[in-house]
Length: 323
Image 1 (spheres, rainbow, N blue to C red):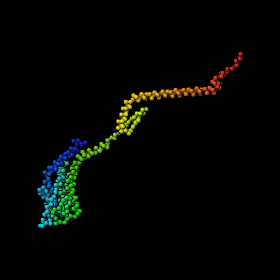
Image 2: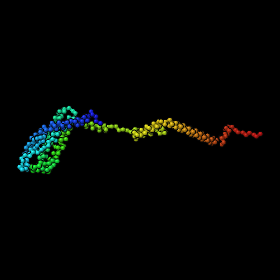
Image 3: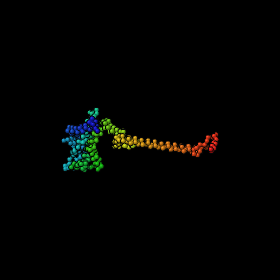
Image 4: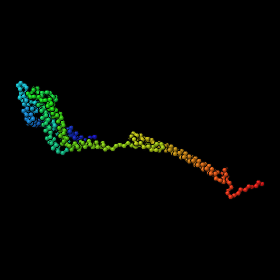
């Protein structure tokens, strides 16, 4: 979010204020002097650009008039033909550049204004020359083009070719629609490269770097405990699952007394079962030992089959006479 103290935001607000102010000052105070200076420059270069065609270029009533030497087909014929020239767009590049520059922070404001104005002088002259050449072509060809109508009288001159007329029309469109906006903007960009790099581009690049280096959010790991006391770890868990897991843990904690009692009962029953199994195994082992000992005694010489022992060796058995 842009804050009021942000330089970009301040430049934007300053542009909204300074550009209309500069246009107003230019329209009421500087337009006529600039038009007069531009008309004088074009009139001075006319004998070199259009020899034997242009007599003069003057200002009258805030409008530039081109005095042509092409005679007209009228009765009686006229030796001079005045042609109106709209040159307001050519001098409108200056207040636009002044407005952009006044809104840009930095040192050397007067130097930047003067340097940009000097750079825009040949651009304004070029725009005026393209506009003048198209009006000459329109007068010679006498064909309506680009929402403009030719003079009501014809000139005693050969018309231009369709290709040349089309190219002069393109030049007129550039001087009227493109250059009045693009030229001051390019000059402003060229004179304020530090402001563009350090503020505008730096902000965009910083946002992109922050978005690229932002750490990824790892999902929480849930540990569930079943009834037998075993833990189950869940890797793919969402925040909702974590909430559910926390609620289930709370429920387990609330029911912990009953679960512990059940666990103790199950452990007691398990211990009794294990002790009974141990006693049965010991009794079986004892029985197998007794039976094995009896078999061994029956196989040893000197022992009776019924487990009765014979007299020991070395003693004689004598019969007792019957009475």
